Image 1 (tube, rainbow, N blue to C red):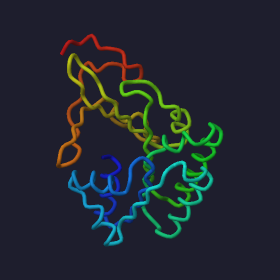
Image 2 (image 1 turned 90 degrees about the vertical axis):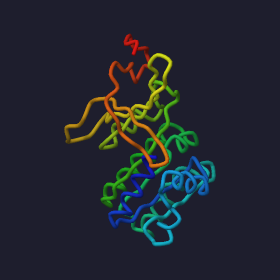
Image 3 (image 1 turned 180 degrees about the vertical axis):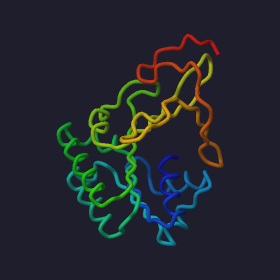
Image 4 (image 1 turned 135 degrees about the horizontal axis):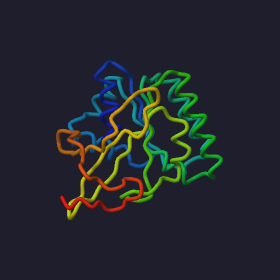
Length: 204
């Protein structure tokens, strides 16, 4: 949903957006976007969007990096989304993955492209992504999404974990997703530890 909004927002502003997907098929991405009121097919037909989907195992990390660079050279996007880094992480050793991230972020920054990369945690509640230590040192901003349990209910929580060079909201806010897209709500009072997943003492 964040990737969809990021790309659609660029197209709406007259920018060109590029999506490189490794988690879902092209058809699935288009159907998901349509269910949220975003028409990827029309955006592509009008030249504002390009969607490319590949299996991570189809080639090596250096080849994936080369492909992304070629796509950027050809399409010249203002925004680039990679979904997801976690899919690429599993096909390479840790050192190779870090080298890939350094090269990717350096390339994106040099071209002054707004980039959004997703990464999946190993657990639904709390825990740490295996790539977190690499991502945090290379990126300008990190948005953390978590499932948060309070009593018998499960909520979706969003927080800005890092925003380099800027003050930002430190609260964990509830967000919902429906046919109209993603909606940011009020702060979640008494939320548990979003990193460790420990329970809250607040019974509400």
